[in-house]
Length: 417
Ligand code: AMP
Image (tube, rainbow, N blue to C red; front, side, top):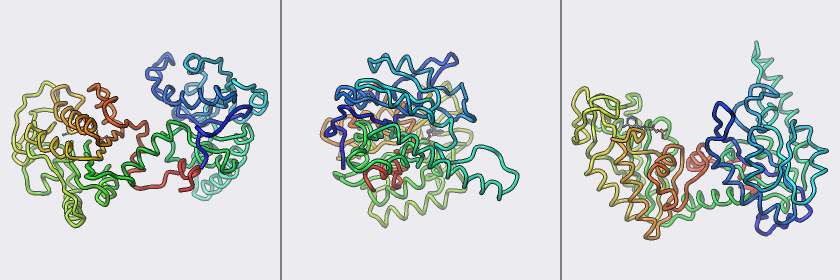
């Protein structure tokens, strides 16, 4: 497989798919440029080699072409600044052949938002009166998607995918385009490479014991991940709102804690499966409860299955913190997805912070720790420990699908599996 380090970009034009879907404020100013910075090592390596770059990204969910609210032109000055070159702009991503051909070594061109074209995702945007009309439109869009993909591929000599955030999508620029380049001319960017290696360390080259901490609000959104993890981990710590579905299923009293009553049987099934697979499920034993869903609520610590009527569990209690920390500190591989409580309220962050600190200690002692999936990333940032875990993933949905055991089209398109 080709790698970005081995590849010499001198005199080559590279089509680089990045994820510059950054948040903007009402004045179209970037509020967090993490995603742009994450792609810089790749972009800078290409320019330093004497190559030129066609930067391609999506932004938001545009409904038409063009949809100025989602124009990538808004971020052009910032990209130029951090990249250190005056990046040119192609206002129509499907009509940029001349601008791409005119690129000289060391130059960069950014394409307008790929998703202005429905061909990028390959799904018709319009509403249809009948199923037949819809099916026909789908066929046409798929055909057009081929043309669109060929056009994008024609701009460049080589293809670099550095957009892990969209690796779970089989879109024109994230996956389909790869087949227009031979093995030696397509590769992951540095960011993508790091993400792929991190996932591999968790899912295949696993040092044991392997502990996953699954938090967050609902069992229903995590079932597939939990099921897949039950074939991989030694310990599964269940935390956050999911705790109460399990507690109720086991006959505990949970007051008005968040609970999915239609998932009680499923919770018991998951516990059975864990037993059959020799996986130790670690559940909370105590909870920090509140008399309302608010940071200023009255609070108390109680055993997790003895929550009084009218009260709800919003975080784990001190005994649970200790149990979780002991399991985490004895682990060699750790995956953390989802907080142990409502960490957005300062009075209910303690449990998540203690999990974060245990992970940091385990990492210091040689464990590999991966933190990923929206809210746990927010947690490690809030606690200032992002640089003390082994890896913080940039991919929300992509990371979760990888943990569910799915093949990600963006990875498969380059690596072959
Ligand atoms: P998810 O997106 O499924 O990872 O869920 C994250 C959300 O779960 C966060 O916004 C937390 O506030 C929420 N959460 C965690 N624990 C609880 C709890 N005990 N009760 C209600 N919400 C919770």
